[in-house]
Length: 388
Ligand code: SOE
Image (cartoon, rainbow, N blue to C red; front, side, top):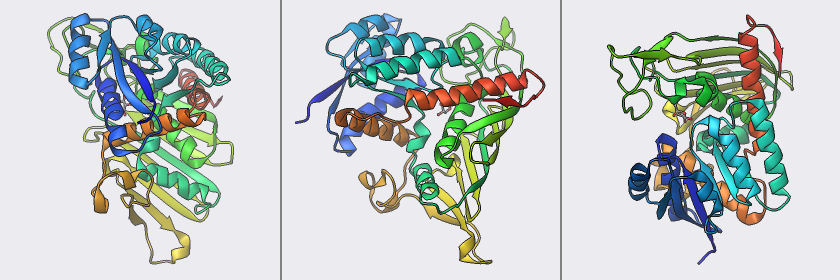
């Protein structure tokens, strides 16, 4: 029986449910060097958090995250709350000697992200580790994309084309939830989903964005307030009071990378019909690859060496040889959204047990945060070119 890793999680909405599923599932499908125990769940409302703990499989609940961090029977703090709380919780947890998994984007500002990174570096020296939850890195087809770039199959990278398209905000009466309040979320489409494609692009391409030119737009400037909204979009009343939307609905930018590649990025929650189209296309000097999360088990690959009649071929990234897939279903049955979170837990637990820095580190996430800030600065200044 392996030694246990006792987890305390804060927040139990969408991401809390995804992380709970991952903590529960990871040891059932992967041989982990430490046994995760779902020790305690924290949230402000005593009845709701207790009910969520029971439903999601946590042993106990707390109503104050500080109390969770103080508990001797908690080794790791998993942060699944809005971005305005990330820095305070993560720094307190790291200073208390607890490992941290923090949802993306890392923070609501570069300054906060820098403080969190400094706390993570100090903790690392004591064998305490921090990781940011850019979960899509653990989608098998995207991991395979990274392997192909690293193998040199694409040659030097010329273009990076990244989109994250959703449509859950197109209803003008969708309620004013925390994701639409800058003081809580930091930004809108940009930080919520743009952060994912910035991280994925830099990670798969193996290079860093050095400058951007951006535009951002808020299409619906006021939305219904109040009510007990559940989920992402929800249905708001059209007659009641409204409050201001203080974040972007769409963020678009061009970018330069430090290896000479150029990129174009688009993040929006207003692309009707696109549900979770997280897309990445990379053109190298020798080959290209293309990924779309709405067809997440596939990676499209074009190799110029295959000759004029080759075309893009679809690699079904579900074989046992592909990243993570060997531990799941036989003969390529395929995976879903939740599996990347499970793989995130697998890699995090493995890194902690081996005394290694898990990735993406807070320093990696800080690089994303700097791009987010540069995009906002550029868009606020009529698309001026802005160095990251
Ligand atoms: C909403 O846009 C959201 O839930 C994001 O917050 C997540 O990070 C992404 O994985 C799915 O969409």
